Image (cartoon, rainbow, N blue to C red; front, side, top):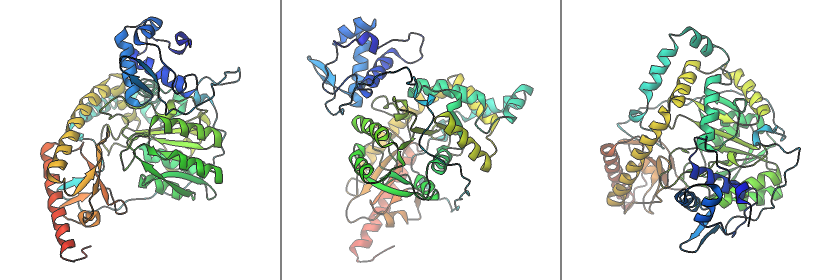
Length: 493
């Protein structure tokens, strides 16, 4: 039997629940090739005895691994590593091997460059806005954040700390994020691996400017987050689109491209891909990481909607795997607090963070130090954790409520797959109905729609039940009108 006493080590002082520690360490053992596809795991009683924990704790860990697709449980028989997991050679550990991914320098060539900003045009706002997945600001702990902000502006030492050294982000916020990202995402980093930005988009843009150029190739899913594509286009790189299905971005297609041309980066949204909301499967996550090692490309991982998962705990990010520093991890607090509060972060090797900080300083000399430290206080006092627990329950209920409305009132017009998390549903119109005509309706505004897919994103988190019902009624009227146009032979818009 494998030495599970060395594979699984419980840290009683950690804030991470014991069952999660067991699940995380089994995932790491799968990722590094120690546990292979089909390997039988010890029974719950046996592993509980080895680990010194209660049997129910092991059962909870196995249930979590099963829900995420890492293992398969055969009731009353045994649990085994999923047969879909690719075969990997067990890794050997030498004296020169680093212990954590972000202790490595990023060896893949990148450049420092200055580029212009781009702006968006404003348009009139209708009463009903179907956004692409925004949080409900009415639930957000904005009052607590502003209270902390005001408190900081009245203290001499806080004023000094907030007005200096904010280009990379204040020390307080980066140090709190080190602990927060360790507990919630399993990242092993230091404050030097973090850059605080004005939202995830700034992180994506800075990464693109350093990693890509006119002779570069970057792979993205089709369809993809459009503002990310624009950032890649600004770098002059060629964008290669690959298919995406219910298991996420197609890694077989990525491999085919890697074998025919030089690939410099792959942009991926593993959780609730934008716009289709699908989650990248465990086997494709592992293959993508292996392809990154084999073909030496950087993975730009967008942490979209990570905190909102309703059926089980979210998959650990690719950035938490045992990689060599090739994963640039980006995230944002805008999906937790308010889209207008532009606070994001980037995690990367220190040498890459230093160059991103220098480039950011050219266009933005620093962030809001008071806001950074106010957010640090919210994290430290567990206000953010409490808010997320409340918001997740509420958004889950709203998702299910919208599901019922769509089936009841729009069943003949649309089809969709109910996502396991996130804050939006990707709704496809049935043949005979046009999303272009629907989006042209002036009674409401659809933020994100795709003519090619004849689909749109229905953000449910920002609306209460009354507002969701009003939005669905407006959509029904709009679809009935567009259907009448098509039946009468009019071309419409």
